Length: 105
Image (tube, rainbow, N blue to C red; front, top):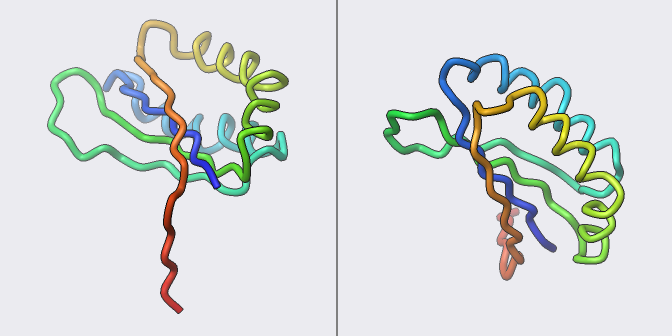
């Protein structure tokens, strides 16, 4: 299992609009591709003067599926985000491989 992690620092002036749009539009659009098993938004708990930072995580079963997502869907979805919040965010992406995940019964 892998986590496709998108870390975003969003300007405080558009924070509320961005967070609502992520929850109501962008993440549902990403999930509707059928490429991901689950998702979550995590608030990165650091004191910052410039913006608020989030980690948006999408769980994907294998690298082939993630590659397909990047080829077929990511350019359009990322362009929509960039167009809507141009000059109001900084983002970077990482891929995490789940080595161990204990779920108590």
